[in-house]
Length: 517
Image 1 (spheres, one colour):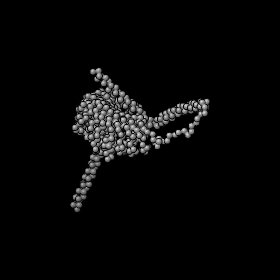
Image 2: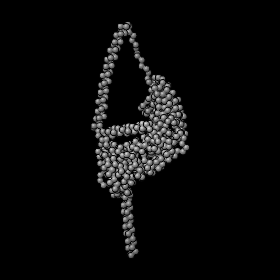
Image 3: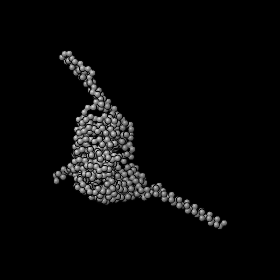
Image 4: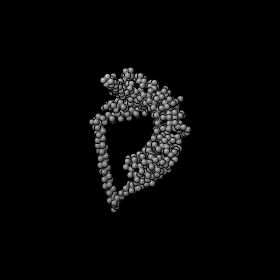
């Protein structure tokens, strides 16, 4: 009997312990998955409120920044475990998208004043302040103390001055975008501290003083996937480079840099993972380099337009077509001095959607293999020396929306254009009087027809304007969401144009000052 009581007590104790363990596990699970009552840190909430106080925000974009839990505020993200703010996403477009029905300019481009409170966010690893206006902020010195950052986007923020080299202390950065500002850099040595960087965009940053060693510095970023250096004032493009470390590069944009009539270096075509190569408006000359088998097979966009490239393209197309599954969709070779034939192998690049070969010196006919490009939407061959007949197979390209063939020496093709319609009879006047009378009748007829056509022309313009105006404006008045999207788009275009004008004026002023000194 005693043994039975002992067994019963042990069993009861065991059940109680199990229940307690299950309860403890549930509590731990809730706290680790973010279902706990952990809110944001008081000090960090106060920092955000100070930041908001310094924000010129007449449209109340951050009106949701009220209450105790700042983790629920617009653009704020917190750690589920500690409650620390780890993400601040105040992209101007994002703010506008989330302010339903707000079409004011401030929604699209709020003007931000004081940034120093953000320095209290010690655990911040994601910061996006792009598409805002920091014209009153002198430089970027506030940023380099946020050493846990992995994502930093300050594009289109009107920052000016020199990029502080201390930004290289942000050793955890994976994504850095400082483009479309009024910034300069005497060198890029600070990049050596960002060895984990995967995305780098310095579009419009003036790098003319760093032009000789920019590539050696970038080569210290072995994990780099995208490099954007559009219109940076670079003048030097190394023709030989013994060892390229960023072999996983997928996007390379060096367009709108004047490389002083350099040729395209071979190393540019040695990337096997490249998907987008932009080298337009670079003042490049010479022939297109040879492509080793297996290289550029992942390439989707290739832009070599607006240069002085010469020679034939047969080998180039042949190498691209040798890829078992070519990915090329957009090809821009216009505004060069290329000659010779457009090879039959063009038809093997079956994913092509756009081909721009205009303003060259091609002297050939259109290859019949063009019919294989069933996805082709745009074909520009104008202003060459092409001849022969236009193949009927071009009519089989059902997706083709733009076809430019002018400025060549085409021969007629009745099967393509349709038979020439000739008059069925010709009347011969018997004397000069009859001829003169007929001419008068013709004149009267023509004048009457001209007046009639002019009347219909002006009426159609008026009707078109009325219908078009009310179709657009009427829909904007009736549909609130359309009105919101339209004005957001309009203000975005306006702001981009304003930034471009300011940047170009600053560049011009620097050039004028440089020439004076």
